[in-house]
Structures are given as C-alpha cells and as structure tokens.
Length: 79
Image 1 (cartoon, rainbow, N blue to C red):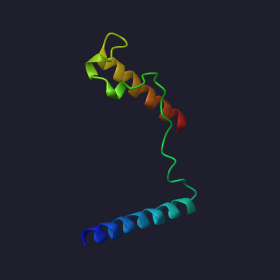
Image 2: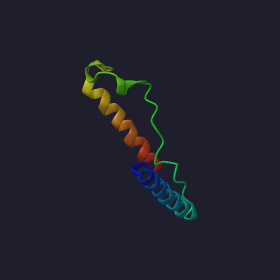
Image 3: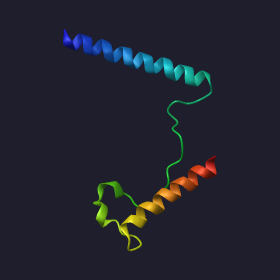
C-alpha cells in the first residue's frame, strides 16, 4: 500500500517536471543548460581537502577569495 502511494507520488512529481520543462522549451530556454560556465581553477579536488591545507599564496583564506573573484569576473563578462 505504501509502495503504491510512493510510486504514484514519484510519477506525479516527474510529470510535473516534464510539464515545466516543456513550457521552458516553448519559451526557447533549455532547462538542463544551467546558468554560467564553471571556472577552471586548476585546483582539482579542493572541496575534498581540509580547509587549512589549501595554501597557494601563504594564506588559506586568500585561495578562496581568488576563486570567488574569478567566478564573479566570469559571470560579469557573460552579462
């Protein structure tokens, strides 16, 4: 009984998403496209590291600021 309700709810949710995507495509938008390009920082796996271990310029906080600023610059160039 619970499984049938769960399946019915999941189907309703996916149908609602299909309808939303159809409306977006009619407006000329691709729903799976995303918003902006990603920045290639060269720091592969940085999110898996401990925050204190990331030290490019002698300051772990500075590393995060460089990446955030690069992402902002890329977004501003696009707009």
